[in-house]
Image (tube, rainbow, N blue to C red; front, side):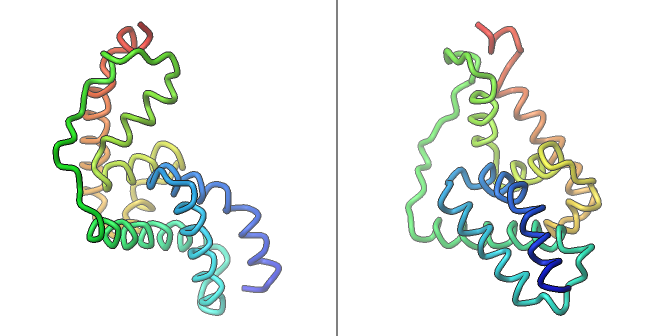
Amino acid sequence: MTTDQYNQLVDKHADGLYRFVLKTCNNSDKAKDIVQDSFERLWQNVSNIDAEKAKSYLFTTAYHIFVDTHRKDSKQERLNTSRIAEPMHNSQYSDLQEVLHRALNQLPEIQRSVVLLRDYEGYSYDEISEITGLSESQVKVYIFRARVALKEIIGSPAAVLE
């Protein structure tokens, strides 16, 4: 891969990668750091990576950096185990995007990641399997469970619009 190809990859994929990481970690500063680290690792391995497979490499790397960061942070901070998820339809939200964002935050990390990769970024099950290191059937199960959980959290559309 040449320097020009690398720069084109940055221009082409930085925004999508940032959106994915931001939706996954819910922290703008961490998302920027993870995206920067992902591109840094791509640059360090630029001679070993084909430009056509760089997008998959970037998303895989970002996912793994997020997982490592999340594990490190969870060891340093005490998790609040008394957090009880309240049904979203009882809250007075008029912004459907905010309702969906809060519902996504209530999902377990792996479910949130695979749903974001599938529904927000448009990856196939096979590509998600490569990125996360899960089998294709595990990816399908996690996506199904996440969608069921989202339906339960959000409730009916009429309840959200009230």
